[in-house]
Every structure is written in C-alpha cells, then in structure tokens.
Image (cartoon, rainbow, N blue to C red):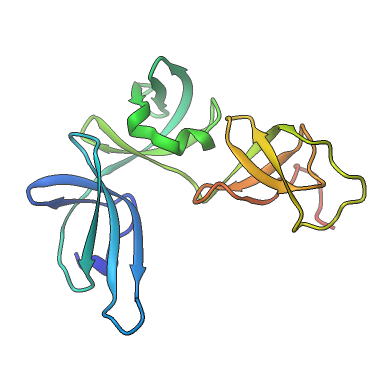
Amino acid sequence: MKATDLRPGYACRIDGKLYVITKFEHRTPGNLRAFIQVKLRDVNTGLSIERRLASNDELEVTTLDRRAMEYLYPEGDSFIFMDIESYEQYPLHKDLVGESMDYLRPNSQTIVLMNGSNPLLIELPSAVELLVTDTEPGVKNATATNVMKEATLETGLKTRVPQFINVGETVKISTEDGSYMSRAQVQGESKK
C-alpha cells in the first residue's frame, strides 16, 4: 500500500516488525517535496517511534480484527474491556490504551483493534459526550463562545469550555485534541 493511503489504525510491517499507525500527517513544506509523517507503536514492545515516508513508499499492510467492546472498569494498571459478542474479557494495560481512557466512561462502547487474541489499539469515535464535574459557576446571559474557562470532566479530562457551561451539563468533546465542540443535545430537545 502506498504511504499516502495509510490511516491511523492500520497495521504495517517495517524492518520485520509489526507496527500500528497511531498518528498520520501529510506535510508539504514550502518548496520541498511532500512527505508523510507517521507515529507508529510496536505491537510487541509497546514503544512508539516516528517515521518520515516519501509519498510513493510502499508498505506491507496487515489486516487487523476490529471488535466492538464495552469498557467495564479499571483494575490496577489495566482497564477491563468485554467483547460484546463473545462476552470474553480483556485487560488492556494503561501503556496500551494511553490517553484514550480520558474519553471513555464505564459501560461505553468502542472498537478495539486485535491481532489474533492480542488487543493492540482503541479506536475512538471523532467526538464523545462527557459530563462536566467541576468548573467555575457559569455567568448568567453569557453567550460569547470565545471566552473560555477550565473544566474537569467525569473521566478526569481537563479542557476549556465557554463561560455559560455549568457543572452537571454534558458537553461534546473532540477525541483528536480534547477540545470543546458544543453542548450535548439532550434527547427530545430541539435546536434553537
């Protein structure tokens, strides 16, 4: 597969080792040739490396099994996930899941990429909805969205939210950078 066709979540073999792509960026600096910057995680050691690839580089891509799983609870240095079809449980070490757990609350579903029976990577949706557990009181009639304040969400993630957001509200957060996107729409509520 050409380097330009790679995406996060793909597995590829480089120098005989199996890696999972965790970050992909196509760069075109000034008057230089375009290149692909990828962040890879070694499946066996868990170590991350960065690699620069030419646009026309060919890589051997391996197919991974994508399984829908439910996050159950933390246990020591691991997080327990359950396959929603077979009900088999898998402990995923904190080094494997990384910052993904900032976006998952217990009993939420996600996709886990597997190589055989080995979990490799959590594939998050582009956005999640989380409850605000701590922030300064909201300013009444504040409608400007460019004035932000610090907020702590139910998973422990800290982000910046507009002044009008209060404790107990649910907000939509980007999993790419942890930034506030909007208030979560409550079922039965219509947009104004």
